[in-house]
Length: 373
Ligand code: SF4
Ligand code: SF4
Image (tube, rainbow, N blue to C red; front, side, top):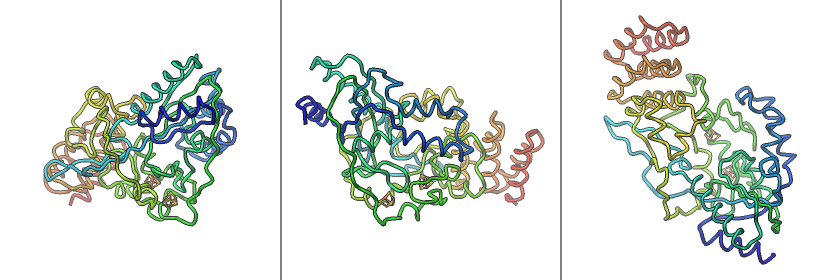
């Protein structure tokens, strides 16, 4: 290994990047064609995903034309903490582990330090760093040898399983590249068999229309079956990662970055009472507050979680949500009121029915009234 590459890796380890590998800035042509194939068969992929956009996503040199190398990092986010902080009268919705703190910010900050290190060495003039940025992170991580694809489609590292966020530094410095890992999940199928919605239709192939992780931010209504399986989640799903035998061996980290901390679960009643402006302000340091997160989807998720938790303390806020400007929030709040049931819920639904003009919400309210008894 060249002296510069080994010094860089040593420095990256010192500042707390758990895995650090290097690949070239050549485009990821195979990954681009795979994404293209997937977009053709997936009705929920945005219009944004035109061929040119996919090619750019898979081409580091579109982002940084001078790029010669990509430094790919992984940072483990497993910490030990309580899962659900909710209690009777204060129901909480669960936050997926990778979102409890802003590890993307943490990883990107560390990659910027790596970039400064290269500048101090006098070898770098251009760079860009990202974590959860505009580049195909998983193919980069695979080619750099950070990890391999698990059958749930998530990058699996040797020491930290799939409990990592990825980040990358594009640089105009020619560094020594690493080889991809020759590893696989072998015969294991635990994640496939444990997915609550059978979204992993075959190894490495995900049906995003069924995956709770993807549904988190989709603006459409959830099917009733999905609502039942949603449980008390608010943001994300990690069941396939939680059951993975490789992840179960990972030791929690002591260090817990505080930036963007939102906790393992969030009180749902105040969340449903928030305006979008209040929401964005409250979560501004966490990815949950990012512009690409749909506020109405989060409130829809909160309404469904409240219905599944079944705490009558949620009835007033669910009735209030029947006046939300977002039809999906009104419809899912109606469903949850029907599920919790009782006289107060029924009265709220009857009142809402008189004023509702959206045909889909009207149907939700009528179905809920039947359930509410
Ligand atoms: S994230 Fe959840 S729903 Fe999606 S594949 Fe994994 S277990 Fe299934
Ligand atoms: S549960 Fe098994 S098949 Fe799934 S990612 Fe983990 S090791 Fe691979």
